[in-house]
Length: 347
Ligand code: NAP
Ligand code: ZN
Ligand code: ZN
Image (tube, rainbow, N blue to C red; front, side, top):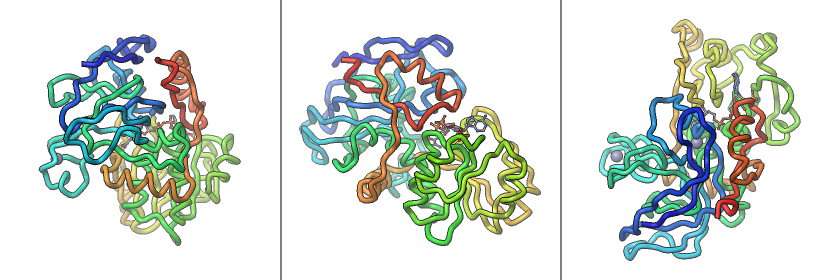
């Protein structure tokens, strides 16, 4: 066992504190990673605050992890000491079900093992990336291309893949009109990725406050959802809408913006239901869908795509003692566009 420095939540309401977590001894196929940076995803906040249900405290969250390999088990072949690597939202899956065999480990029929707050194969609760080191099975460790600045690569491991996967699945590309609802951590990556795939991108944000940034990320159009005229102007306008909002929105209003056979996919995961009026779907044989992160092979494909296209996250690097303030800013939509913890401040 390795005892390493970390930040943990001790309850749903108290600030996160400095502490330590235990990392298991390296198994034959395990990799020890010295973490450099860990992104702050809104899912970390939902989880520690109990939005999605009860969790066991103390809990260390963080599933946008980048760093270097410092030790490998004897059977490890995929990565070597010194490699620049990343870990995203899952650290294991059954590997045997149809979905795992198809490279869709995120949809493992037995449930994938989340990077934090999940029961690990040894019965302990997984602890995430707000810590100096992590031990992960080699098959769930990604190669992080050196073209991407390492701190700006961290958010790709969740925000990047979570938006890349539905954009690829619903074929965002030339001739497709794509809207992105909410321009936070996931949303800003959705804009960059959809634009790089060749789609015509529109941002639907609460206000026009981030318009210049949205256009710089590759969007052609930018509208404020606080203005009711937006919903009139854009009616029947999109092939695909990616909802990244962390709070409930009136989903029917957004469904009315889809063209015939269009899809609104929600990656945003508010704790409350998003009620759908079937008549909003009837209006154009529309679909309402959900999408969860992405498979391991697809995550590698996304990282390589970002390296090739010069895409990375926009980050604000913070120290370990600023995490609680960062949480409050994320909750106020005051993030441009991902907080990333410099893990050296934990050593
Ligand atoms: P984030 O950085 O906080 O971004 C969310 C954005 O939603 C905000 O920047 C804001 O954009 C908009 N927003 C927030 N509150 C709103 C409200 N009350 N009404 C309308 N718009 C609002 O969060 P994130 O890290 O991108 O995560 C977004 C959601 O995706 C979270 O629920 C998270 O748990 C979920 N998630 C899902 C997956 C998955 O696999 N499906 C993976 C990761 C995260 P504007 O300022 O532009 O309006
Ligand atoms: Zn996440
Ligand atoms: Zn499986």
